[in-house]
Image 1 (tube, one colour):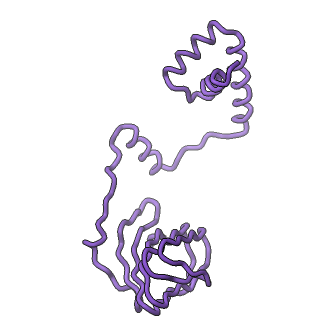
Image 2 (cartoon, rainbow, N blue to C red; image 1 turned 60 degrees about the vertical axis):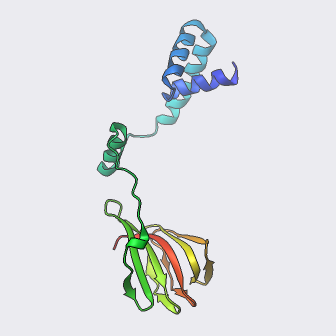
Image 3 (cartoon, rainbow, N blue to C red; image 1 turned 120 degrees about the horizontal axis):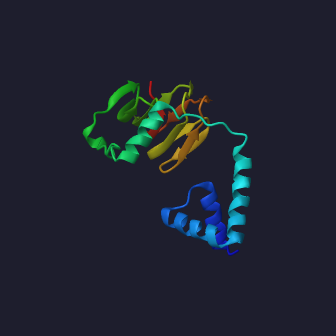
Length: 177
């Protein structure tokens, strides 16, 4: 067998072949016993891999998004113009702009503007947090992050304080409070 026939047999056995590949595979199954044997071998292998797993239903919100994507009813991309949004004070020397809130997943995307000397106290992340420094410099747990640097903080991680000696603007994907 050639590599391309091996790949076709594997794709057919997995059920991921494109319609044109299915037609080709079915023709080969009828006319080529070595191809049929290869498909059978892959089916046995894949069945063995599948044997220990149980099907699970996706959460309703995930299934709704899948159905919307299939039907073409998916929402359009969201474009946000931060310049049109107000800065809101949240602590001394610290303001934020909420770019987007995703209540289904409990997250929000925000811009923080830290003035010189800003401090965010130690806190626990209830979701994985992404922090990207856009301007200036901050320090998180002793690590200095400059413009362009990104830090990923795992869920259920206690971290901080976060400080900025000279000010910064940062993008954070964080828990929706």
